[in-house]
Length: 336
Image (tube, rainbow, N blue to C red; front, top):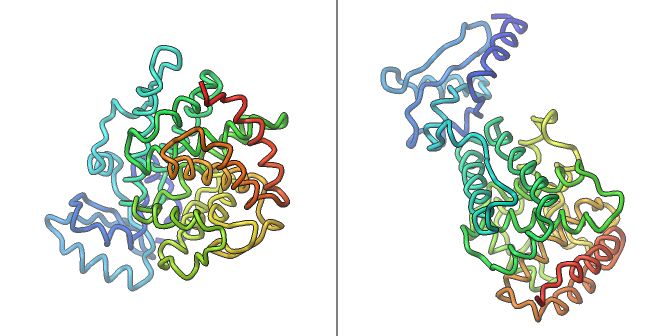
């Protein structure tokens, strides 16, 4: 099979199959039993059935020879993730459903997205879910502008990682709304980043990073394991393969979301002069949501939290983002 034929075969599979990194599939072999298809060099398309073929040794041999990815039927992958066809469209009535019902549906979708990414790596299935959640979140923000207030006043009611992603997403959008130039595209960029920044991290890993936020001078690099320290770059690199779906600005936010203006963040330790404005919006939103949780959602502490953020994020693009924060809290009227 020549290069052109291989590309044609790959294109024909995209409508019916998910592409999965070969290493990812190997790592999950003890949990899956669906057939895979491989396309390699001059050989024809080969389908391997784990029930009948010595799949592991055959696949290992091809990986040693340079195989990068395998293909699996979408229905097999969907079944593995316990997704039914009726759940494909996220239906939310922005006026007829309560905040709790809306948040429950969003969190359920984020669960599916996280399972897809953690089990299969970056693929169109995961990105379709992320885009769907992002679009629905932006729509809800426009139809129900006080959702953020309801979400954060309710505290944590749903799985930690999922609700945190949604809370950060709505906070970042609300912060962006304070600027006249903000557009729907900007909201989409920041919500996608909010959903995907920590998609590969476990709850314990996220909380390990969160504890360091209490100390702005903490030497993050010293305390964190390599998986945590490298995840911003690794996730951005994986998602960059889908440049027709993921905005470059979103990738930059993902790569920079643990950086700090003093240059003591990670993974690159860049300072405020190199952190983008959209990244600064995300970083402040994340710190705000996490600090509210640290204070058990005591809204009498909001002024203290804002003063802390002003002290630690007062330079360059962060000062602009903070000006939006000063407008956001009075508009939320959290005291009522």
